[in-house]
Picture 1 (tube, helix red, strand yellow):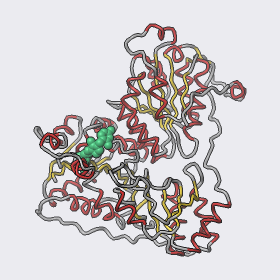
Picture 2 (spheres, protein in one colour):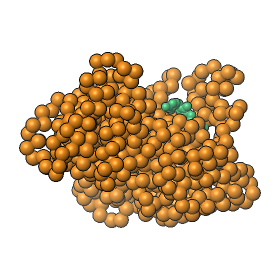
Picture 3 (cartoon, protein in one colour):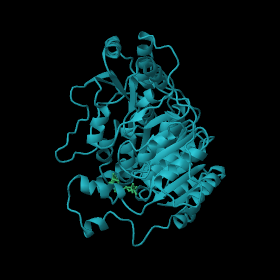
Picture 4 (cartoon, rainbow, N blue to C red):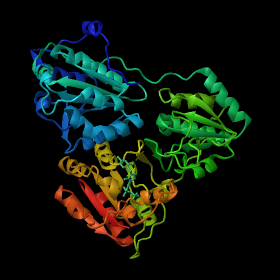
Length: 535
Ligand SMILES: Cc1ncc(C[n+]2csc(CCOP(=O)(O)OP(=O)(O)O)c2C)c(N)n1
């Protein structure tokens, strides 16, 4: 739920820690963020945030990373949160700066990624004058935020920041937006705040567990998984249940993060379009939901249903998104005596074409599966190019797979950037549609500046290919003018020059041999590398 916080923090100030020496509001904020475990700030600042910038400079406990567009800042915070399991801060410039970052905050919200937004505003004394950048910042923040608050004076800032962190960390992960008028940053503050207690996931009730056990004993069950159920012990418990009962394991079409590959149970992916999705689930008698909602179509199509649960099938909630789905799955596994090993994928890299043949979308995924190292983090915004070949990585080396959970394109490159910062010892791979890449291409510059090990594969099909399909699917008129809005030609984008212009090494390939060589070179490179794959 969105709300403007009105909580009285006087009780909390009693337990606040005293920091030595005088500090301004911005300094109290930075130290409070650090106290709350927020160690990185993705930033695109302006004049109203200069004291925050100064406070970052003085405090070695927080890393500052510049994004050249706010969509990069918010998308990187999303990717960081998905991999680090804790929030980063963003620093955004008033309503318009926040506005530029909204689309990726929307994606972060759908992914249940914790994020603490710090948004500057005009000094309180300046607000009545309707200066050019005056705007209703709360109104910009509300639709994408679970928690919004505007600090009223410098001494409140630390307490407000502690509550913002607490809100962001509340299960399953929330967007908290703290708005700071410039004078709350520059005026004197008293102290930083310690971390406040965090509301972790709620325990699943015994009834939900009993009902799931009964369903497993009584008929054909499919689990629809998301959140913690797609990782670690949650996924292992789901795998044991599947081994013991034959239940199917399925995930949302665009789950925020999945641990995939050898050693993990294979989780089928719900098809994208409504008719195949309903067909895919047909025969299921009970659909057990863990950390997700009953499936719905991405879009409405004339004459097709929005709900994808097939007729005759009952959805049963084992765990809501804010509940502890991993423990609930373990409890179900124990109750049915599913103690044997889970069904896990064996390592079997896909065969890949390596000759001078024409490069295809399928060949790219095979080459990725053939050469990617263990524990690669894959940010997938490949849309039509990668989607049909997703299963080629089912038995590839173990990896984390991150997807576009909010449907707002322009997430992939920033998400890879944030993930690389969260996990500096792991290889990151962006599988990236060219149309989506252009929304937040500036993230490549951040990758170069921070020397991040990210390989970006651009599927250069020079089109909004999915929209060509959609034009037909929704039954709209097709014609030359319509097609011209869905093509990225005349002129074609030169990805090698774009990448080089931002300090990223890049090559263009159009054969399988070229792709395999470029991919291996990228995996060995230190720092970012981009492959323009002509498909
Ligand atoms: C913010 C936002 N704007 C527009 C769209 C509509 N849209 C969906 S996919 C797409 C084109 C994607 O093109 P590309 O990344 O090249 O992938 P392809 O369709 O070629 O596979 C567009 C414009 C969207 N989903 N989100």
